[in-house]
Length: 291
Image (cartoon, rainbow, N blue to C red; front, side):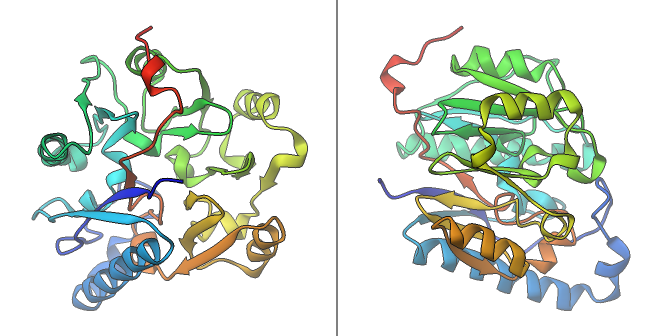
């Protein structure tokens, strides 16, 4: 396996200063923002170290004042086979991130880490890899919509990448992005939280994933943001996990690397949210077509 490359953002301007999802607790943050920022810096360093120790490379971009959620680059774009589709955010609080990330992608393109930047149609809201997850074992995108990303993002993603996809409507504001409740694992397993999905979305998951490959997260496991995990090979990097999830995953041969991400969970994000994989390949990049 090639060395995975992830994008992360320095946390120097992180804070929980507004509320755009039910997890965000500005009151808790404002109780001691100095301690909160110190803890966030330590947590970000620990996540970066865990990724590097498990064999990945990490590219860092700087923080920017007034953009506390810039630390969650998973929402910045969908990337596959070197093609970048930058996000368009629903909430005004995050829309300032679009120009920052676009500049970062232009720099990455100049360095040869990505090859092409493709724009979404103007009427589409789509919040990056947080709502569009590539499943290498099945050769398809799982596309979340209904909370942050608009339903018309589904055909837009098909148009941009020319890949099979399965649309999944999210049922709960608590699980506002697909990556908070859905994590394909290498080897064909799927870690997911069923209550986050509509009945139709659950039926779509069941049609694609055999019962033996479904790992259903408990309420406790989902609330710990452990489904919001980074996986490559048999390595899984995630927030501190309940013992129940450790048993489930280690029994299947996965190796867990847990990081205390409490400051970012206070904002509704975990390990996957804090990273964006740059080098993901479909296995048939040379055959990519436009629908």
